[in-house]
Length: 175
Figure 1: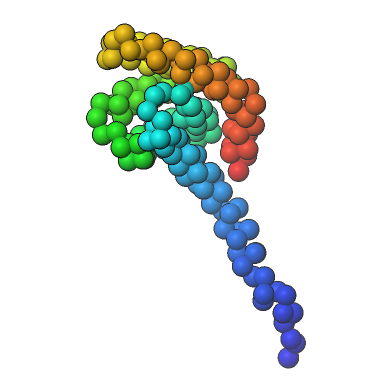
Figure 2 (figure 1 turned 135 degrees about the vertical axis):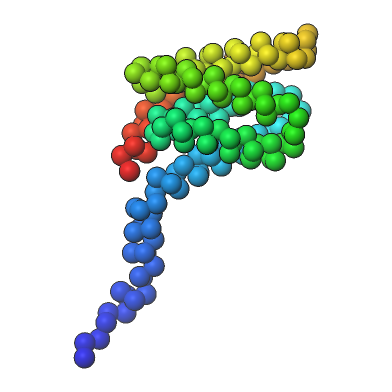
């Protein structure tokens, strides 16, 4: 009887892990993107004013171009639920953010042929501008505090789409 090499038995879990990740990689990336999008609201528990650190628009557009509109809408719902629990905002804010993401998804649907970078930039500007207008109607003159957050959010998403948008969609679509 032949003796099995001890290193084959010792490192069998590495082979199992590689097989598991290759089979479920696309699903794991989806879950990771949704968690990052939901946990993006965590800073609002620490800092009481808007900073404009909005990764969720980028994540929703990337999911739309990688997985399709149905999974993007599921991701929006999950991101809003996670964000509501993390930030403790169980009021009108998640409903307003849902409207914002519906606008983002409609922009992506209409601008699908433009590519992820162009569609993402246009959707970012339209979504942030609509949130600024809604904020004006909801909080009135205090919207002045949200104007720097508008510019920070737009510039951050422009940077993310320019640097990582096409790359991330290609990686996820290639799995």
